[in-house]
Image 1: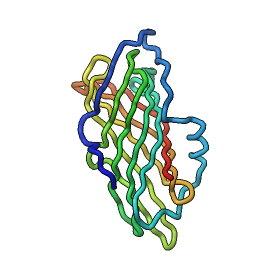
Image 2: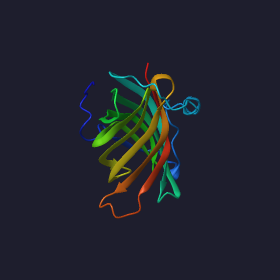
Image 3: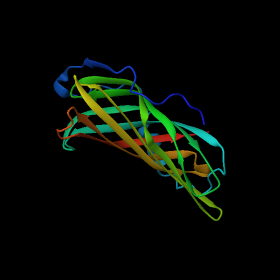
Length: 200
C-alpha cells in the first residue's frame, strides 16, 4: 500500500476574513460532485470484492457546519484519498488516506486546509467473506488541532460507506464530525455531509 506520510498536523491552514457577517463564502470548484454522489449512492453493496491486492480511491466530500447542531456556522468541501488493501478472508484491515484541498467558510472566515491526516488507528476496512460472497465496510476518521476563525480548535471528520458497485470500486456515504474550541468545554460545532470516492 502506498505510504505518503499522512501522519502529523494539518498543513498550511490559511484563514482570511471574507466579510459578509458570517455568510458562507462562494466555494471554488470542488472535488465533490453532488450529482455524481446521488448516482454512486444508488450503487448496490458489492459482494465480489477482490481476493487480494490494493487500490487507491479518489473523490470528494462536502459538509455543513452547525453550532450545537442547530445554528448554521459554515460549510467546507474537499478531496478524499484512500488506500485500501483486500484479502480473501473475513478480517479487519487498516486504511491509509487523507482529506485534502479543503476550502469553505467557518464563522464568516475563509478556510483553506492543504491536508487533514488520518487519526492513528481510526481507519479500518471490515471485510466479510461468506462462501463466494465478499463484502466490505469502510470507516475512516481524520483530524488535527489547528487555528480556525481566530481560535485554536480541534477538527475531526469521519467518513463511512460500504464498498459498492462491481468489484467494490465505489464508496458513497455519510460524513460526520465536530469542531471543538480550546479548552474544549463549549458546545461543539457539528458537521454533517456526504462523500464519494472511486477507483479504476
